[in-house]
Length: 166
Image (cartoon, rainbow, N blue to C red; front, side, top):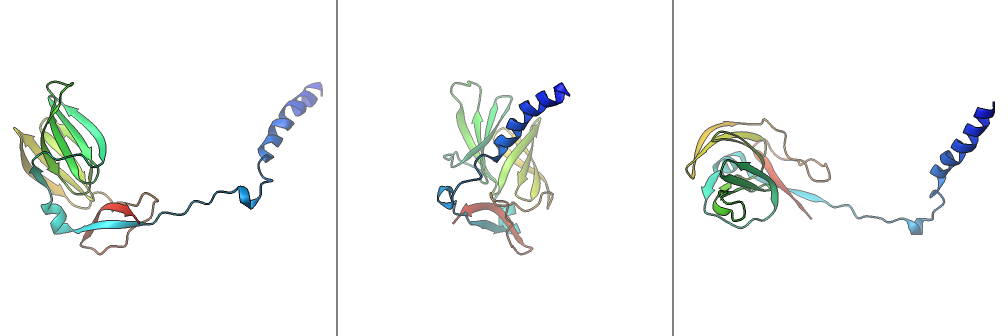
């Protein structure tokens, strides 16, 4: 009985602290305006044709970074990958940009690159600053969702490659 009283004295105040903050007025509340997003779409044919090894370009929105042997890959979210020589980590030298609209991730095994390009999985070989296309698995991934979780309403031939805030 003595332990029950002691337990009640210790726990009851702790439980009642959860009620703090419920006596606020509407003036204290902060209303955040919802952000609407618009999908950036491409036809399947345009998306498939967008994969190209190009001259180096500036990074717009950096994402994940990958290092494989003496190469450094920096994802430019939904645009592709910047490729650097990484022989000297204090001075990486950009050698190319692998354009792939809608791409956000990459995995490597040897010289084989596996890239998620929006809804598709690409298999490419990168060798001596040249890209060789191996295979495209279509519709492996679902359509991209907006940052707020909303879905885009697109036709069967359209692929969402990015979202922009309105």
